[in-house]
Image 1: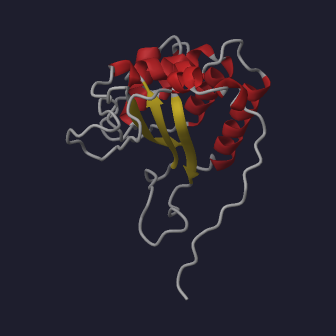
Image 2 (image 1 turned 120 degrees about the vertical axis):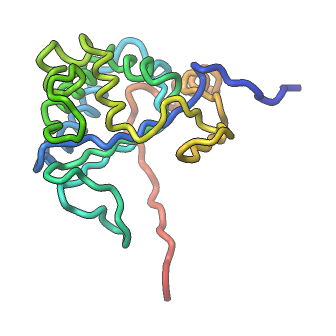
Image 3 (image 1 turned 90 degrees about the horizontal axis):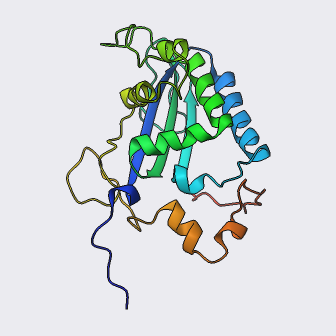
Length: 222
């Protein structure tokens, strides 16, 4: 008989990434193109080693919102851009600590290229309290050799725009600035791939085309 999970090692914990990245105004098309290019490039040039266990990403969301526009479809204020800039919202639930999670992507050339392109369309001008000479600015990271050569500075850049707390594990009962639940605390992507029957055949890397069945929205009102 298996015993209940009462302790989760730090490397097996899940954490939340919730970025609000300031972009140059009018970069909606560039941001969308980069996301699609990144997805197609990874699929076309799969690494010899499946990176999913290393990156540990359970799910992610990327959303671009233009300067001054409201989040569509809801009657209350949603995501907001910094005045004069677009915003790129990125959400992810990932395994491990923040630095190992981000650095795992450095082994995938297509992702490094995508992160570099992101820095090119960022606009950090006028951000309160941000010194233009700070080595963690997008401009200075690019100037000094890119994200891989400036990993620590890149982590700091991401943390500057990360609402989430990278020390707050999913499923924890400790008080935090948000509630982050987890159905299976400590169940990492690597454990799923290694222990679920035929996992790598059912969900191969790179992903195969999947025919998703149409879902139905609830009928509201009369």
